[in-house]
Length: 445
Ligand SMILES: [Zn+2]
Image (cartoon, rainbow, N blue to C red; front, side, top):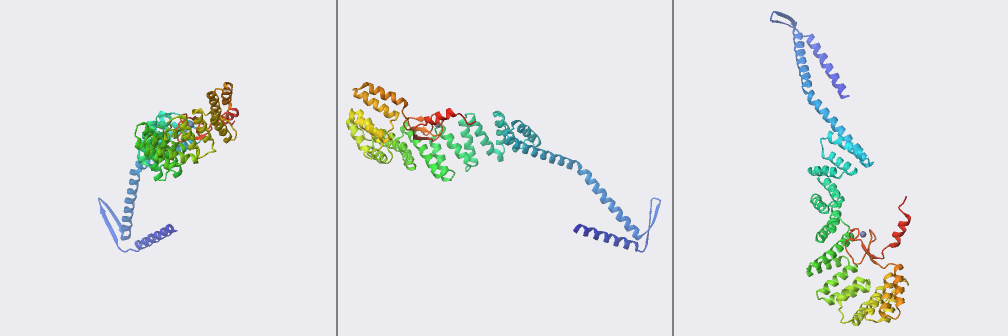
């Protein structure tokens, strides 16, 4: 509408000008190199305007022609970029569809069209990973590290590659670099905890967890549970290095974070006892026994209340068991101590009470305990053999069992000795039945 008004205005001006020129008075004579031109004043003005118009037009045409090569180059570059972006999009679709060959082809096209731009490298690395070409993936990722905007993404890919290749030390180094770049990235924290615990670097893992809790990267309950396990291992490590004070400090921190874990209470009490703080050790164990009786506590109790002889030992265990007189573990501990003191009647009575406390179920360990009592008493050798035979088919006893792989452990550890999972051991019977049923049914379809 505006353009139309402009054209109409121009046309009106041109008409007015032509009319004014035609009405102009006077004449002009030009003599030049043997030529003579007679014209009116209006004709001269018109001629001057025509010459000016020709100059402007020639300038326009010259500029257009001079700019042509540059415009051609720009057009070609834009076309390449468009093709590169299209190849990137098709490559991403191929990766999502799991088509490794197509993804690699598109990655090559994108790299050529986009002059190996970091984003084309990323596609190439993912395509190489998809087709299982680890060296190529690593090459592309290393190239991406050179560019600040893709370094973090490259680190994540390189960490995954290193972990797949079993290079934990390299993975740890790369993850620490990633933490320098983006300390708040959740995968960085999770991977650091995983790698540091796997490497047995309990001090570093404790530091990582403390930082994750401060910055709310981990839920406080999970951070505390993990930190308790890490500090527990750290305490045991320091104790092995004979750094008693530091070991006790670490165990105390673990106990504060997880006061309901008997394995930590037992370790702390054991450290107190070895440091000569017998009363503190015994009070810790006896208090915990009244809440959660556990065999680990019974073992630590031997250190906390040293006995002069087996009978004295039995008296000490009686004192401990008073905290939870009807509990299975109290009866088992009493039966063991009575057997040691050769109080066979007492031993048998408590072993039977332990079975009754487990709902009448005589577990494998109880069968072996009955066998040892019979053996020690020596009245009925056949009875001992019968108990031992029965132990083979008896229900399994609780043990430190891995939640991930199901492997039972004799003693607690932060890492599963079978699958390496961190903080997955819990006190329960190993699920032999579950494993057997899974084997019969086979995998789904
Ligand atoms: Zn495991």
